Length: 112
Length: 114
Image (tube, rainbow over all chains, first blue to last red; front, top):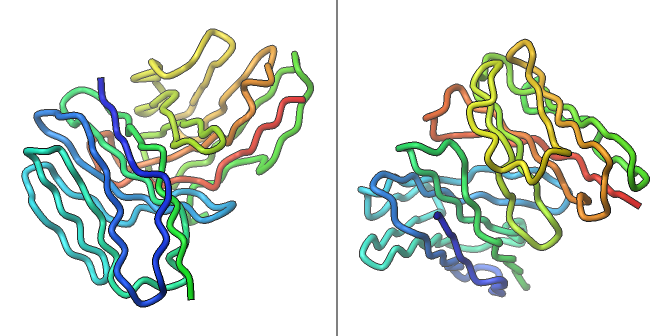
């Protein structure tokens, strides 16, 4: 079945870049997502990438996909205190399943 | 409203009681999903509706859990004979169609069973 794994915690200084990593199980056609969850709030979709892409950039966010290693990363440039949150990687197989499979989340702490 | 709305935002119930959690999806969204998020975990899939029908209920943990969407819009998640292990945040999401890449999440209902 599908499985998504993430490291639990990351601390960075304000202004530095953050890199959050995720590994996933393979599917022939899969969308991979990054969601942000702030305390007491719902999940906010940040960006997504289709598994036949290597990279996607959207303002301060860069998603890199290594299909060989089944590794996904989210880079946040110029990290701000407002970026402090839990970041979830999620996988969706467009072939049969409709559901998202989430990782356990990475808590990003931004320090001054 | 503009987003997915879930009510109540918080629910405390006694063990053994019955609860209903409501989800109002974004208008026009045909796909609706329920997820459960336990403390310190990522959301786990429960059930998916396409229109009025449950297209995939493989995530429902047991027969105490049931969900309906009678008119293809509002959905209700029903939990019978609640147990302390059911305590979690229940999240609802909707999207325009099944294969649409973007699902929008509500803020969730925090259920506490005491």
